[in-house]
Length: 163
Image (cartoon, rainbow, N blue to C red; front, top):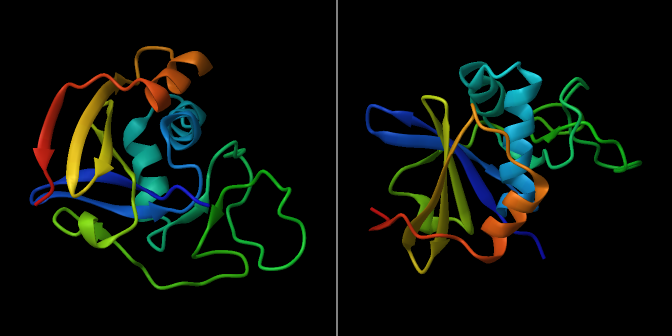
């Protein structure tokens, strides 16, 4: 079973983002977003552009991806490649499919990651409720144990209703 999530950015109207199909929990996708920002030498704005604007159809998976490799989905054949697997390059050429604030409850997303001003906001989604569990500054180093701790023992910062 997959754990879907949304990778998003702040906009004038709230946020917009794309689907990420597999391993959407913090030790999977949270860590992968972190590694993507590191790949772009800490340039969170360029990483956001890559993750959302350059791949608007969304992702099968970026977990454990090598961001120096060409992104693309492989329909048949080896899925062992650690290239980022998007739905708009490779064997798939899906249309853009943005998710906007207010539409999250219509998806199967269990996590929401908003990249904004050098911070990764991490939300758990349950029963149409968003619970903000962490704000992770890209200026601080996170270890594997930190991501796993967020999977299992999220700390509540704030909670708000999905609009």
